[in-house]
Amino acid sequence: MSTQLSNFRYFFLARIYDAALLWFYQPLVRRLVEAVNAEPGNQVLEVGVGTGISLPYYAARKHVTAIDCSLPMLQRARKKAAEHPKVQVELQHAAGEDFQHEAGRFEHVVFCNSLSVVENPSALLGAYYASLRPGGHIYLLNHFTPERGPLRQLDRLLTPAGKVLGFKSFFPLSPLLAPDAIVRTHRGRAGYWRIVHIQKPLLPTC
Ligand SMILES: C[S@@+](CC[C@H](N)C(=O)[O-])C[C@H]1O[C@@H](n2cnc3c(N)ncnc32)[C@H](O)[C@@H]1O
Image: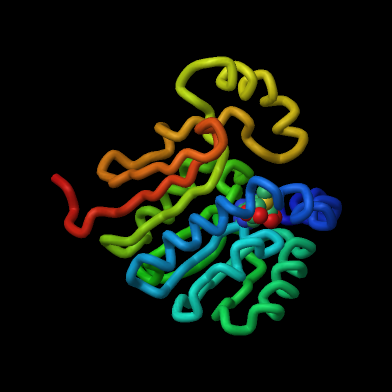
């Protein structure tokens, strides 16, 4: 998604985003960040941080670099970061596709409801997985289209609406995963919203 289009969409969404998602979404975000906090390694990258819903939950020892391509969302995240000065956070205006960083710099990469809004989720996830330190972690919080059943059909049907609104309605998990990745999932509401924890093996697999 271009930065201009993202700025336009999220100019409106930024105002209502937190209130709209608070009731079911925030506990999942908290759970995800607590999983990050529980792991060793303090260098965290969050891609598509939005209004910064996740920021208050990071432990003070974590150093969080948080990027977003939408200025209105980032402005709210800056406010939230200022309200939680103990959290070490560096906010940057950048698209995940363009963000320059040394390979191996981050031990944890977080996508909270942001992987399904990028142009090419598989390519972006693959690139971050490749640049992740061996033994490092990627955490995804997203809706994932089930392998079968009515929700799969519904996600397909909603694809055109998703395109207009800027997200991928039809979003199955398995095509996104690297073959060597160690994957654990926590299922949220009806298994539709999930936290997916992907770990890169310490040693390359043959
Ligand atoms: C649905 S919101 C989620 C925000 C936040 N992570 C949360 O959980 O509330 C998606 C966010 O991803 C950002 N975004 C979309 N495409 C992006 C990209 N290519 N690179 C970085 N951020 C992107 C949007 O600007 C928006 O703030």
